[in-house]
Length: 114
Length: 113
Picture 1 (cartoon, rainbow over the protein chains, first blue to last red):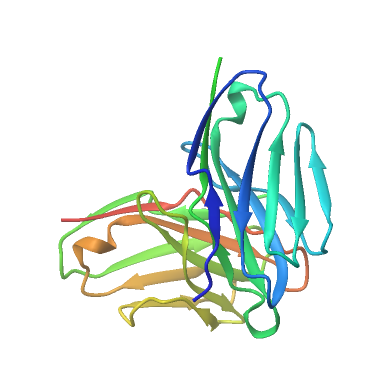
Picture 2: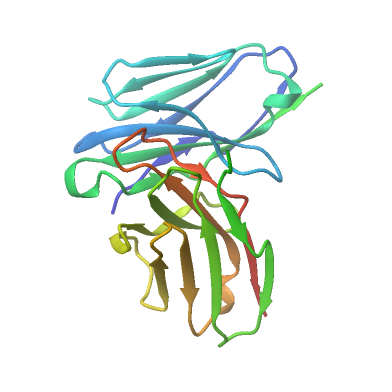
């Protein structure tokens, strides 16, 4: 059974603080690692899809890194804003026959306090 | 450019009944995946449809079944509903030979009483 873990479970930060979350996934049979942002009353929205070890992606104040050998990814938010409040989900895609089965972690809930 | 649409948005059913949820994928997408999201958990993979066939299945019983139509839209059917089936059901579409990112609908909230 594939296990994708995320930490912390929830986080409360002050506006302007920088923060980061961790996603752990199986280091074998890796194909891709996804990050999604899920705001209340909306649908999950893709932030990044990373496929190569050492990949770094950036979108505005949000960035992500990937280590496939040790099975972890970090998501960083610089200068958090209230609109960053959301649940951040990571998801693992495995190789070959299971490559299109995307397995999600439980998410990290971020609250940014104005 | 129409995104992923799901219907209905909310549904209340009684234990033992059957339910059908519907999903229209984003324009141009050919693959539909269904997820169940219970409170406090991440989305759990139910199954995926491509070319009108179930291609991958998660750890869900046979009470959960689906269908994909020639226009790529999809249905999720759940028979003999249990109280534990109460959850948000998310549909996600993607392009099999394209980008890997999933595009999600807003979900159907199913309550079983």
